[in-house]
Image (cartoon, rainbow, N blue to C red; front, side, top):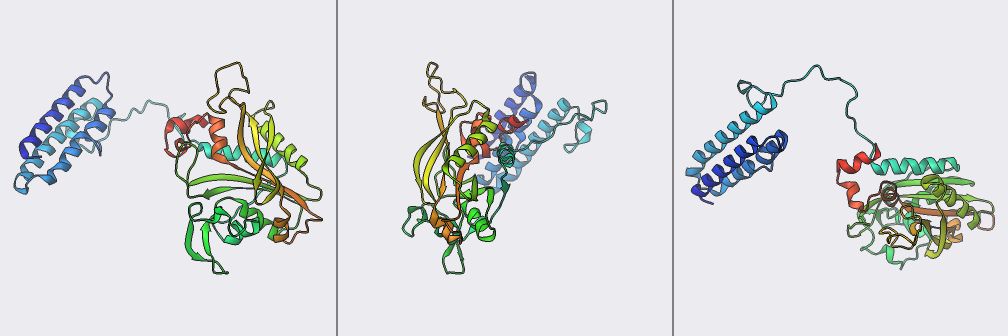
Length: 351
């Protein structure tokens, strides 16, 4: 861009600004200010282009740009009730007759609200909250949970390893689930145990509408005498009904997880279409009437042995779920990425 083109562009911006000011009924002053004088406004971007113009012409063009900026600020100030003599730093006059209350206030994030609701539901069933570190040892994250050395979850494409060694010389890692908290709890506590372990986890995954490399999980563990799959089914049914309403139904589908046997994927009846087949095809459950929400099962005997529990005496169940998925269902959010964009339209849903 040469000096002549720069001047022509400045003139076009000033003309466009004047048109916007004259049509202020359809465009508020804040929007006009952001469009022309914001950090990425038209005038700000034009002033940045001065670096491409020869230095001998740059000074004169810069003065023209600053003059245009001052004129725009004065005209915007007049719209906002700021006198021209007050300068660009002046603020609009305050209306002292406006009430001081109620005033706008922030809200809890949808993920926080979801986690609080889930925690309250499990608290009613006798579960307490346990926490653990984000940077974990291989033993707690994999070995004690019955992951064999050749399991694909240990590969670099699934796990973020850090440049720190544990006591055995293995690389430490960002935990891929909150299950290590279960191992730490069993290592330090005698049964009966009834805990949930919410927190952030990390996996090397591409970000899309339903996946992220950093997300949140909540896992549960119950260890006592004679704990069975029936206890797990009752617990999750009561939890789902408390969270989604008494009409919610739960079903178990056989699945495999290294740390439970038998294992199951837990599905809840779709809270959007209620499983109705006569209406339009539900985009959430794809017309099946069911949504997968948890993985669960009876704690594997090898996991109990790793924590010095006698499998002949003790048994238990465990379950895990992504908090983001529950938040998407509770607040009608179709894309997980919306939860991290700080969009007030999303955040205000929890008010």
